[in-house]
Length: 457
Image (tube, rainbow, N blue to C red; front, side):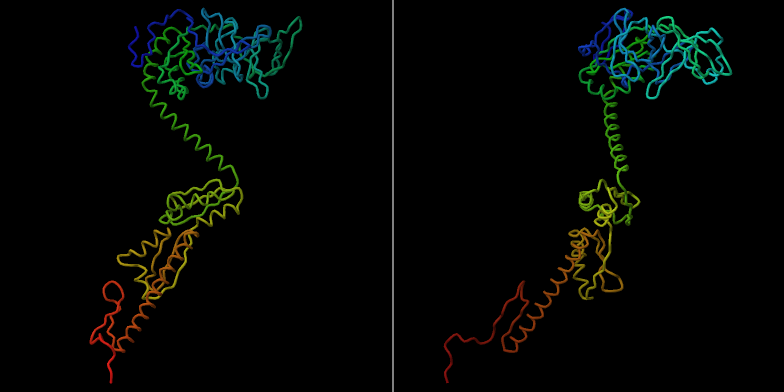
């Protein structure tokens, strides 16, 4: 009996008769072929032990060889499904998109992998059956059965059966030969695992993790149906029993796996975009003081956005070491962005008695100037000079604000001097006047006042 599955992925009702059929409702086109996508695009998922106990590599898991009977040629393919009773298998040839059903008699398990020593120590005799590797440019390897006619100095004359009474002969090197394995039956049972509805999207997102599940259960293949609703497992009965518990645990882990997979996909796209950017045009790198990087970036990235909007500029990155990297189609375009971002410094001479006004009480005035201009403004310790540092566009703004502040101060002082002079004249005329009484300016008259008419003589 199976242990309860918290996601109701119960398989207790599924029979375990050999090659029991549970249709996955694939889409069938007018030619009778159907589109099925397995994990990693094929059913290549489990350990397969061939003759001699050799363990298959991950790339060969779920793979078989299909024989073309007339030529005795073997082509590698992935098994995706099986008919009831194992009469036919649904396969996809390596390198092909189309899938088709083939008779089970044409399907054999992969021959065991061989080490280089085993390849080089193979010594077929005249009359022995062998299989010869053929691989044209852009095509996958195939193996063709033939008979050794002669051997000369490390080369073998092999004849191949042909339609009719003719034979085809080929001179081949030892490296292209392997023993003739004949038929290696590839038989297995099938079960269907229904994916809980709420996990279907997550399963589609994480189907590249199915090889791990299949490998641990020693399945031949584990495939996800195109709609993500079913898992098709192919393997020995014991492996199919083992995979039940693994799939139940996989369902429990699936939401977290999907979250990580989504994050990984996002990062992969970012890396791809970054690499694509690197492959375009040229790059210009310049450095600024790390403590001034905020001025390069600007409020909410305003400076970077402004420079990146320039024609031909693809990307601008800032790094922790103070480097700024500009990618653009041409060097002049990159330099134009650099001009907007590079920190420059200028000095403005002021009067000694204006320094305090620029700084303001508690530094309030100079802080306001820095915030409004996005520049750094400092006073030289030994001379009445103000230093402004910032990107070019902000520097012009800071200079204008500083100049406005100084001109306002000078204008105020001129007005105050004028008021003082005029109030002095009034006092000389006998009109008492306090120009700075209260919060504003005003006249104050005192002494005898003429409230009647003019005095006569």
